[in-house]
Length: 237
Image 1 (cartoon, rainbow, N blue to C red):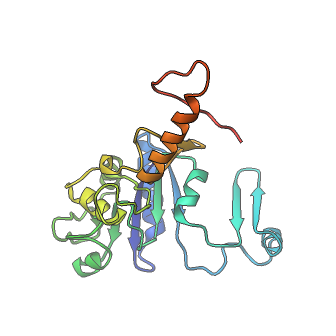
Image 2: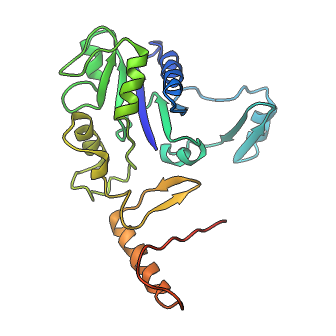
């Protein structure tokens, strides 16, 4: 999965820009899911049946004629939400503390852009506003933003495992945005052992990956007909 983070201060048009970028990505043949960070105390109206059920259930699903939803009575980690979203591209509104993807910042001037992560050591590859900053260009055309997203978006697993030689995923993300590294430098995905869950890659700490790989190889070696080589295991639960 690839992703882009669209951030800005309150009432700067984040949702409008997210929707516009998603429409332009679709015109490029790239359907995108979306995920929104919000400061609202409740995501559902208190008078609805869903809210009443959520008072007594840890999770509630709802299926309508043309839409579906799942509500949890707790805050879910960002990475736990990804397998449910069902697309290879994700547009994330808000979440200024995320350090696992590049971002577009909505800013009225260079000072705001820097506060939102544009410039040296930041995660922004474009500023949606009148002023660029420190080599990060100002882009006002949404179609151009969508093109940038289609070419430069990425998503790191957020394990902070250190397998890539960096202190954490954010440091690698900063280097990817600057052009000093690439997503392929992440050792938690795309290794000799790969696992997908419902089509979404499951990131593996390199140490855990080596243990799983060695354990599986040792067990498979005891089975009649096994020979070393590429092995595919499918597990349905």
